Length: 252
Length: 292
Image (cartoon, rainbow over all chains, first blue to last red):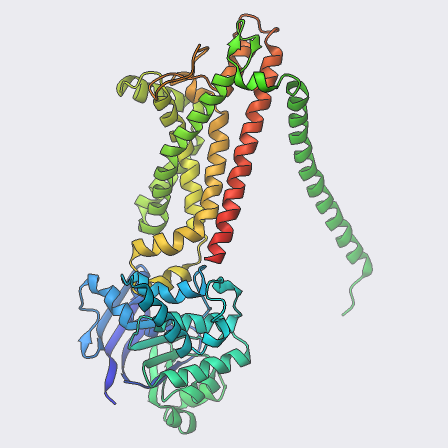
């Protein structure tokens, strides 16, 4: 498995605030990497490096290299950022389907990117909803508003929406934090399924979740990457005392 | 720890007093509105009939109808909105979606607010200086509509801005994350969500514009016209101005009193109908946003 993504000595500042401090880390292809750490530790900020969502926040300054398939995504032309975001999908903390029909939610990414072929869009919507294990539940009400779905279904719809444009990387920012345990379980099963096709990075507050779904885990604290290793190693035999304190629940 | 009971009782009494006061005040406001409506309806409804609505004024405006004033007001409302709505919505989009935080944005917002506070007679004088004289439109529907449009602009800009601001940022982020450009995101996600609230701005603006007299005084309104306007460069009559002239400067003020109440009644009803229509439109779009 090669390195799909890599950061080399990345520093990020929001104005005067030093949010990421010299982070070097790699993400293997077709694996799930979990980012853990207490609130405000920089894990979400780090996640948003990979689709340049931090660019949307004024006064953000970034140093270092962020490589996707060996190419520095902060050196590309501004006009190519849309292209990057097509390749790096994202699922947000709160399910945020658009106020459109279920079908149009999944089709949105295709339409954004100029695809108009109706039969292709239809096929892609079905394929993606099947991938997100939502098809059976919604196939008879594709024209209904996405808001009629439960929270867990909405989140799987958002995953389908991200999958529809066939990215190679999926970023998930606490995708299950607002869901009940059963819905959370479904999302976790889904993540497990999807890693065969995609490279997944998931930010989570839930230690058990990180342990269950991920192959690699990075522990962030106060903008530093304290430890990064195989998840099994982190959860059974962490090399740093801070990591052990955190995963055993002694702080954070 | 135990709490003395008298304390609780006093709290309850205080609450009851405050809520009672608030309730009394809000009922009072409704009562005043009803009183005004009742007065106008009582005095006006006897005058209003089909002839009143469709005939020209007769006998020095003591008899006949107010048809040209109704038509004139509808033209002016439509004309001013044709100008103010697209311009105002675009300005609102610029301020909320595109302008960077900073002195320029603050200045634009401050100026918009100031514009909303300018007395309407100033708009009238400005409209006369710019549209009637400088641009040579003459006293015309075009000049009057543009002047009223300027008056409505800050309302439309501000409500558009507020409507856009209330659209949750995660919708924008989700669209960007799918490779959507800013323009596409605004068009396909942000505007449809904000549309019902933007239409509220339109309702407010229409209500304001249809009742204004000062801005049309020098720019379009005619004391009396024997025929309907034929083009946008013609003058027209308008309900608020008509009401004003037959109440203050007609030749037989007492004789035209019933006509004045009839006119007031029609004006109120038109504003009411426009408001209801716009509310229905807003609810329709509100539902469509959810369904689509």
